[in-house]
Image 1 (cartoon, rainbow, N blue to C red):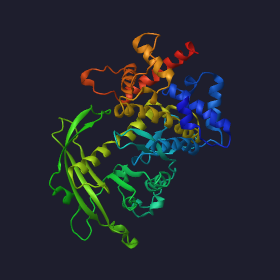
Image 2: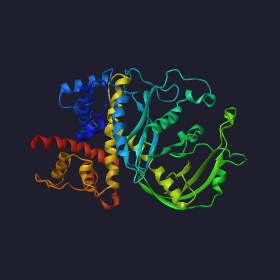
Image 3: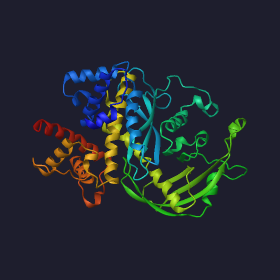
Image 4: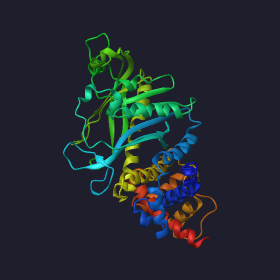
Length: 449
């Protein structure tokens, strides 16, 4: 409950009772993140109160995310640099056809419905530990598609303007003492975003376009291909549904280039932009595996191998936001909620987002600060219940175990075997184990209060 107060206590709905309800709801859902709301709550009265909360006109995603954002800003206030990772996911409610207020999410003509969540996740530059959601944007796509040519529509009329708006929002809320490095995938590669770079705000994005260089007939990636390799780097590629975990050996090239503004926007007199371009290719990938090839644009230094390696390492942390979406959808199962309206579902998605960040942070906090006491992430009841079930005893020590040990025990509750070849536990086994731990903690509290 303490962490829920920290994450939600500043939520302002104009009614303090709603804030208290949100705190208790977040705490309860964190204990049982993968079950339905009726299963997660103790009584039918609590279930009805939760549904009333999601349906209350005073409750919207903004104050829910806002409270969590304040807690996130508190965590980053002493950080000289943070990485701000943006990405978009689709929340699909096609299996609930009676849901009101949702819109199309697939290609034209496909009967898919839901809405979109664009989020900006703050992570630490050391180890990529998730710190919280800095900004969010939820939207429903109109039923009638805009038939005008996307290429020539004003930016403010395109969905991609969310990248600009969120970048500006983050710049407003993060204190000037903290430098922000904005990280994005290929969807973020458009010229206007690069124009927002300044002395306190850098970009590291995956390129989509082979742009023309200023005052030259050359194009971007032809030029970088000609640059000599800076060196080789080895990274860990996390598993997903289509591939196992593996190590990849990458060659790294870099060049400083000045980009010509888009030809379609000559009338706007946009300035040329100077960036560093990195070409990263996997050497000798495993048979059947798609080789990694990243083309990155950045305003960070990249002239030396150490600088380029820093950029590469920070870009690999982009996987954190994909894991956040994975926990939100597969762990917390927000797409299985049957709340009948988009407004209620959006409120629920915001609440579950706080739970998802906690589970994700726990995974990487243990890797970055393995020797820290586990009480930095777990309550007294949680670690004591964990110790008791792990050691099959009712007697627990006065001193809590370190964080690495506690997270390993949690992962084993979730099915992690801990063999030498298994490496470190991943997000999936940790959230499975954390779910089980919450049930154990409930029992511990029953017998020790």
